[in-house]
Length: 278
Image (cartoon, rainbow, N blue to C red; front, side):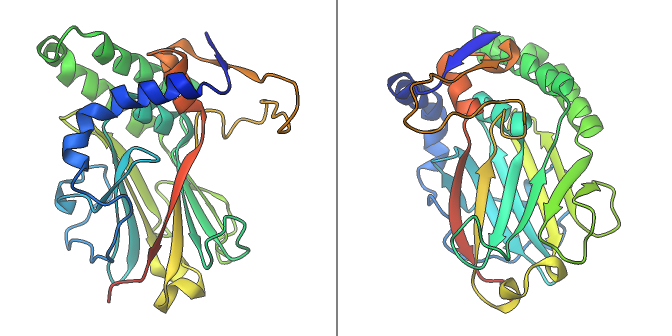
């Protein structure tokens, strides 16, 4: 286990420069927040394959993800791609939550939230170990010799374990935890592609959106929850206390050390606004 002492600003900034460099070329031409509403492609299938979406609409630097928000006549969609191993670990560790709000506040009483996925620790750690093999490879050629089998293994574990979606705020849905095979039309899937990126797709029928989102501008908040965000056995100390909070990060998840573990553990999010494209 790697011990993480909260607050590593200098190391964190240095590490962020290192991990962001490879993806800057593809991200620099995209806005930080999606600027326009968008009609979804006709042939959308929520399966973790994102080829039908074409180029992503934005690259958010606070969360280090590419993303697109879109709609058709029936559904609202969120599509996310993570390229960096540390951010991928963060997503498989704590999932992504999408909040839909009438005002730009997380405590909006009318908000709807959808969270996915929830992976067992054993599955999370096994995928992380596969990612660590990529980190340990001396070069891309060496890794590519094992890439196909690693990607197949990671996808097999993802598809076999990512079985539940959490949803709150929809008055007509009583259960807060749904199977991915539900008959309500709420769908989510994740998959690694041949380029070793993690792709995430989520759709929710427009009929489940709050009334404020049907014909008017609404706000969305996309949050990468962090590894321990769903754990209830972590003690949170109040600001200003003299206690140094120390948590244990599994070695498989830490990978590149304390700075990487800090990124994986901490929640990050951003806000955007959207009007359904007619």
